Image (cartoon, rainbow, N blue to C red; front, side, top):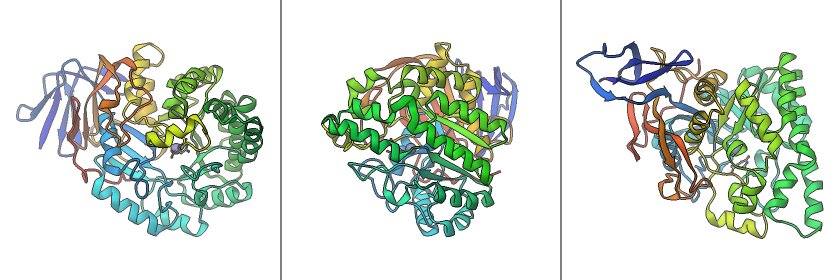
Length: 454
Ligand code: DOR
Ligand code: ZN
């Protein structure tokens, strides 16, 4: 089948150009001067729209297998399609937690049956003797959490937590042999334990106390863990990806490590820049926790997004039910932490472009080109001929209002309910097939394929 996206603009080589984009089968085959496309093709009229590379989210909590009362691979990939995402990576905090080739094979089989968009899955690198074998399954990265849940048992099951520096060192030596990247949630549980005890002793288990605990001493829980990880990456040669980059000091340390030749990539998440203020936490409680990001850190993150110190924005899409959040009003440590966001993230970023906070070129790099480049994903993150026809058509001037009613995720709520902005996702294609158009998800479960590596 041949299709042409005509009369619009195409984002290529860092800018918008008035081009027609030709799709044959699953691939982009040509970019032609506007109006010179083939006449025998099905025309997608993109008048007033810009074609961007389909967004790539390397950090998503799919909840399947094991936690399908929260989300499953159909609902979360429907949300992805509606949000302009054409590739997602799932995380290992499912049940069973992904630690062995058997877990990984079974989980990848579920994606094959259900995913609407393309995918990969990051297993936990917890068992040293499984690391090399799991690499053979075509994964792009491993994931490890340095967190232990106190007061609840999810979303950080102890089976896949790693807290000992010696264990991290051994693991990173093993991963270095695979040449794949290790994604780490940086956290210092020993410090967290001490800080939270002081709030608990005072009888304060509120969402705001939880927020302040994680942000204590200007971010020391994040910073000390990040320092350790960077030093271990330098020692072992393991490629490192730091998730939840959200303090000024983390950014400085990452830049310093790069100067020393450490291969480290950095990610921040939608709630770091669009939620996570004191007002948000006091108003919405556990529904916006995730974490508290004080204004000066939020500012540092915006600067780093603009200047490239932070490589990408990933959603960390973390759906939990209302019930699992409500308990947070009396005990924030009992509420499951994390916020959903894959459906809202690209419109929020396009609004930042509209507001002049971010250039469109940086927005595209942060959401598609950089994740594809850094995780070596073949044929993604670009609209150059030869790429997969993973495309999101956006209307940079179209206003939006986010509502709970439009949520595709199984949980049926979003922390952005009621928020308005400008810059909308109009249509999403995965390898040439429409998966979302004008408010309707049309992609079918099973359309998604595991991405291949360059
Ligand atoms: O807040 C979080 N929620 N942080 C994580 O690391 C995991 C995530 C989840 O799975 O809900
Ligand atoms: Zn996460």
